[in-house]
Length: 175
Picture 1 (cartoon, rainbow, N blue to C red):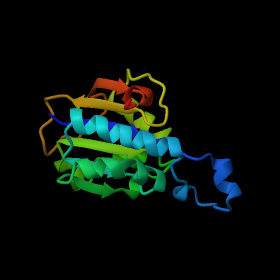
Picture 2: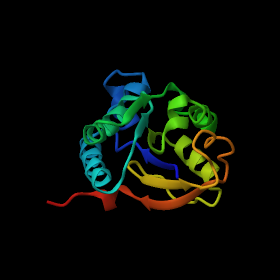
Picture 3: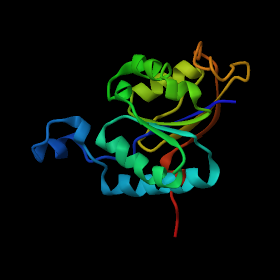
Picture 4: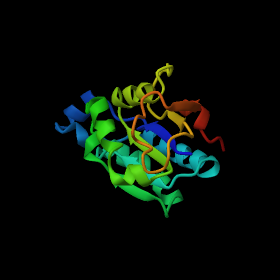
């Protein structure tokens, strides 16, 4: 069975604060202090409860920063920075991603991306999906068993079953 876990990047500094610094390229906008803490909490949770053979991220700084603590926990996983899923790529970017050899070969995938595109992909996988999509949310889908490994990306529309939806506050590690 193929699983797809979607993770919206952790909390970031605001666009306004980023612009005040003189930066204009939104792909370079980093995580906030809270976001760095969230990314560690997410890594702790997934390393204790989930299996991934493939980690995919947008090339934006904030998604790479969100993924970094997770990468440390999954040293054997294939890692792909995909230009297909940059901010505002739309559903089309995610559909292009599903056609890559890396995605097709994977069994347990984590995708770190952006709103509103992640939500569009979630609704593509499962039309009944209806949830808020805050920064740091983790959502896992199981794909129907009838999909074989090589053609698992053909006809993904409506093939996802929601396993769980975890908002970031539930992933917080308390000392």
